[in-house]
Length: 346
Ligand code: NAP
Ligand code: G4F
Image (cartoon, rainbow, N blue to C red; front, side):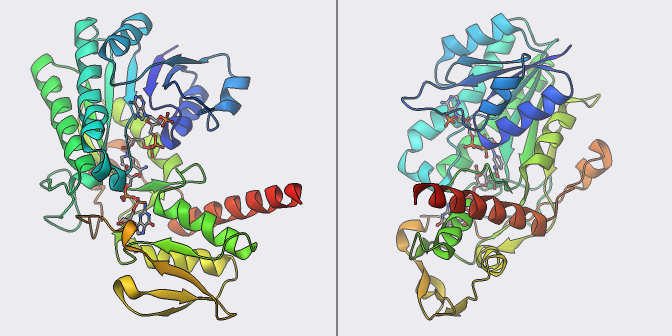
C-alpha cells in the first residue's frame, strides 16, 4: 500500500486528489490548518467513511511542523497543493503569499532531504499558468518563458525553479505540474467562475439583485479539477521526473462564461457599453451585471491558452470533461443547492 501526503487537502484539488488516491488504494494523509470555524467541508464525506484517510494539523509557514509531519509519515508521494491561491488577494498580502507559495515549497523540499527521503519520496509541486503572465507566445508550453504578473505568480516561479533545483542537485523525483485554470462545484466562491454561478443562481431565485465583476475580456483555458488531479498523479508515475503543462487547449472570455451560465438559467442577457462601462440587463430590463474597479487587478493576465502535447504523449492524459459540461455541472449544483436552502429557510 502506497502512502501519500497532501498539503492543501482541504482545498478544491486536495479534496478531489484525496478521493482519487483512496480509490487507487493509497493510504492518504492530509494537512489541514487550524481554523476558528470548520474548514473541512470538502473532505468531511471522506473522513466519515474511509479508514485510510487521516488529517494532521500543520501549516507550510511552520518549518518544524512540516519537518515533523514528513519525517513521521515517511510518505511515498507528497503533493504540495497548499497555497494562498487567489491572484487578486496576492496584491493585498504579497509577503504572506510569498511565505506560503514560495517558501512553503522550499520547506517541504528541505524536509524531504533532511529526513533522508530523497530516494523514497516523490514530490509534486502545484505550478500554474499564472507564471506565464504577460505571455511570450500563444499557446504556452513547457518551454515558454515565464513573465509573472502578480506576487502569486512570482512566488510560484520561485517554487517551480526550486523544485527543478532539488531534482538536479539531489537527484530527487521532484516534478512541476503547470496547470491552467480548473474549476468545479468545489471551487472557492471568490474565483470568477464560482462567483458567477452563485450570483446568477441567486439572481434567478430573487435572492440577489446584482453581480459586480472586473475584467470581462480576460480569457482563460478552463478545465475540470477532477481531470486535473488525475494528471497530478500521472506526473508522479512516470519513469523520470519532469514538468508538464496541463490544459484543455481552448479558451473563453469571462463574458462568454457569464453568457453560458445565464442561458442555462434561462436569463436573457442584453449587454451595453464597453470595458468598465459594460452592463447587462435581464429580460425585465433590470441591470443585473456591472463592472466595478475593485475587481480589476493592478497588472492583469489577459490571455492564457495551454499546449498539453507533452502530457498527451507521455502521460497519455487528456481532459475528459468538456467546458460545456463543466459550466452545466457548476450552474446546476449552485442553483439546486441555493433553491433547497432558500426553501428550508422559508
Ligand atoms: P484552493 O482551493 O485555494 O486550496 C488551497 C489549499 O491550500 C487549501 O487547503 C488551503 O487551506 C491550503 N493552504 C493555504 N495556506 C496554507 C498554509 N499556510 N499551510 C498549509 N496549507 C495552506 O486551491 P486549489 O484550486 O485547490 O489549487 C490547488 C493548488 O494548485 C494551489 O497551490 C494553487 O495555487 C494551484 N493551482 C490551482 C489552479 C486552479 O485553477 N485551481 C491552477 C494552477 C495551479 P484552507 O482550506 O485552510 O484555506
Ligand atoms: O477566477 P480568477 O480569480 O482566476 P485566476 O486569476 O485566473 O487564477 C486562478 O487560476 C490560476 C491558473 O491560471 C491559478 F494558479 C490561481 O490559483 C487561480 O486558481 O480570475 C480569472 C479571470 C481574471 O482575469 C480576472 O481578472 O477573471 C477575471 N475576473 C473578472 N471579474 C474576475 C472577476 N476574477 C475574480 N476572481 N472576480 C471577479 O469579479
